[in-house]
Image (cartoon, rainbow, N blue to C red; front, side):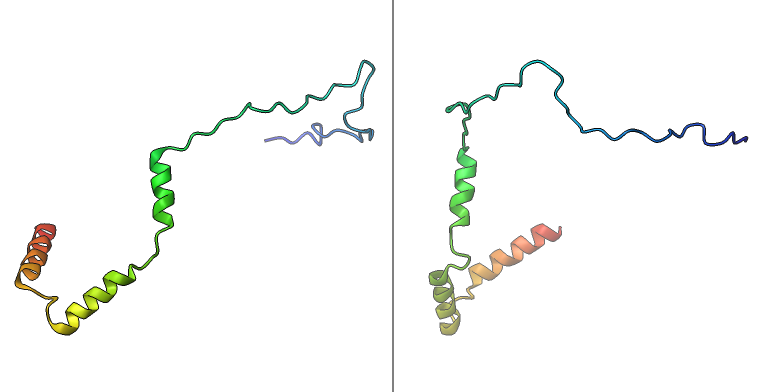
Length: 92
């Protein structure tokens, strides 16, 4: 490999203002035109918005389940069998 010096470097460049107008007329500005844009919100987006407005905890349901647990009525044979079936389906 041979190096022939800084031949690809440029010398000093003059400083000039960028974007200087050179004759002709100044560009005319375009005014605001109402009614050009439109937005459509899908039913799915509306549903997501409604779901976001729901409370994080359904306090009435929590209270109901707590009462069932306290009274011993929450764990029934049907619920336990259903939970076991779902667990076995998921594993197997």
